Every structure is written in structure tokens, then in C-alpha cells.
Amino acid sequence: MANLAAIIPAAKEPLEVHEVDTYTPGPHELLIRNEVIAFNAVEFKIAKLGIIPVQYPGILGSTFGGTVEATGSQVTEFQVGERVVVSKRFGVIGNQYGAYQRYVVVNDIMVSKVPANIDLAIPASIMMNLTSVVGLFTGRLGLDKAALNGSSPQSKELKILVYGGSSSFGGLSVQYLSQAGYAVTTTSSPKHRDFVSQLGAVAVIDHTVAPDVLVSKLVAGGPYDLVVDAISLPSTVVQTARILAAQGGGKLYAMQPAFEPETLPDGVTRVFEPWPDCLYEKQNRDLQEWIVQNYLPQGLSSGAIKPLSIEKVRGGLKGINEALDRLQRGVSGLRLVGDPWE
Image 1 (cartoon, one colour):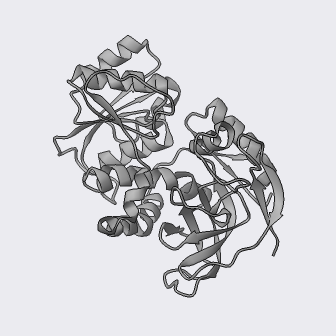
Image 2: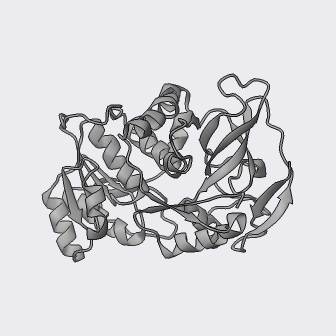
């Protein structure tokens, strides 16, 4: 069985499709026949901007879904033929682990079995951001888990601002926190307001108004115990930092670090780490298992987790350059996926 991959030959160079090895999984690894690649915004920043060092030539990509082709000698929880979705751990080294190819190796930890009635593209499109959501709010901040029935009365005193409710991370955050009983305020453009309004927030604020008006409206809904910027671009950090400053300062939880020097108001600190990483820590192992064994498959089957719309980028592995171009131009209220066999 030949394996093809989209390879980045050097920093900021277009990807090229070449034949590569078909790998043998290690004792605690799986070999997956990759059937859907989910594209994440950080990938265009790695490929086109070179903001994070990687090995060259390299195979990028973090999130995918497919069928178990082979299992390592110590694997007990997965069988050949099962459908799964995978999110690669940040910083893992080795081209066998990159999602931009037809056969991918993965450690047997952050893998979720997919019910037969669920399109693989749906859990693949949310896997990375869902683990980020749970890693941040429960793994790092110690908040309660979401209720699996998808509903919980807003019974907790904590007030949370999630800026960017129409993004994948933002929308999943609003759902997760609301299902756990927290009062969430979020933002959206009018285009996506109907979708965001279904996610459980107590207030959805139009972020397309003038910046001073937006900050005033959001400050009026506070003070917030947590402020999370799901977009984390310089333009949004300016707004969310002002909101924190207006209530005396605090931590601004972000989805990426500041790649350029930034000046924040006194008392405001940007906080970032790869949020899923804490799920690999010993004290969070039960939480990690809960995500992949319960929350993701049951949440999708019951309708408790509402994913963004999905659009398939044509062209198979050759089409990945187009997907990265589109991510760089900006994609709103939508998740892009591709089929490596097309």
C-alpha cells in the first residue's frame, strides 16, 4: 500500500506531493488510513509564515479521521477496522505523525472512536479545538465539566467572556461552559448570530460595531471572572485587554502567543500554552479519557455538541496549498477539510 504525502520542502515554501514510506506503528501506536484532514489556522502560520520551527522537509497537519489499519503490540483499546479521529500532540517530532498524508501513525492516547452514524469530517473538524477547550477550562482552570445531556441551569456565580463565539474554539467554549452551568457572554457578527445564539450564552454582542461601542457594551456586562480571546489576533487582543483593564486588570487567556512585541494595559497579562497538553499530565488522565470516550462521541450523537459548517477543499493532497491560502485570507463560521485520497 503506497503512501503519498504533501511535504513542505523548506520554510514558507509551497507543499509538494511525493511518495513516502508506509510506517509500522510502535508498541503503543496505531497506523491510521487517513480519510479526512481537518485544517487548523495554526497550520497556515507554520507553513506560510514560519512562526513555529519544524523539521524540513516535513509533513504538517494535526487533526484527521480514518480507519485503524494496524495496531502496535501493546495496544488493547483499538481494533483494526474501527473508525477514529485523532488530534496530534503539540511538539511531537516525526513525519509519520503528520496529518497531510494517506497513512498516519498516532499514539493510542488522544484517539476517539466515531459512531457509525457520524460523518468522520464532523468530529475531525472539532477534535483539536474541543481538547483545547476542555484542557483550558477544566484541566488548567479547574472548572466543572459539561453536562453530557447538553443542558444545565446557569447556577454558578462565575461570569465568563468568550470573545469570538463564531470561531471553532469560541463556539465550543460557549457550549461547554454553558452546559456546565456558567454564565457566558460572547461576540459574533450579524452573519453568524443565529448560530451563536443557539449555543447557550446569556448574551451575544455584535463585534462589528465601532471598537469603543463594543468595549463599552462588553464592560457593561461584566465584571468577568474569566476573559478568553478565542481569536487572539492583535486587533482583538486590543479590545479584550481594554475590557480587562476597565475592571482592574487580570489574565487574558489566548489561543496563541504574541508573535510580535505587544503593549498591554497595566495589570493585563496574556496567558497562553498549548491547552490540550495538560490532558497528557497524570492528574488529568481521567479527563482526557472522558473527552475521547464520552463527551465527543456522545455529545455529537445526542446533538449536545453543535459543530460549525464544514466545507471540503477539492484536490486531495494537492489541494492543501489552497486550503492554507484560504485560512490565511480568513475563514469565518466555517471549518475546512480535505480528502487525501481524492
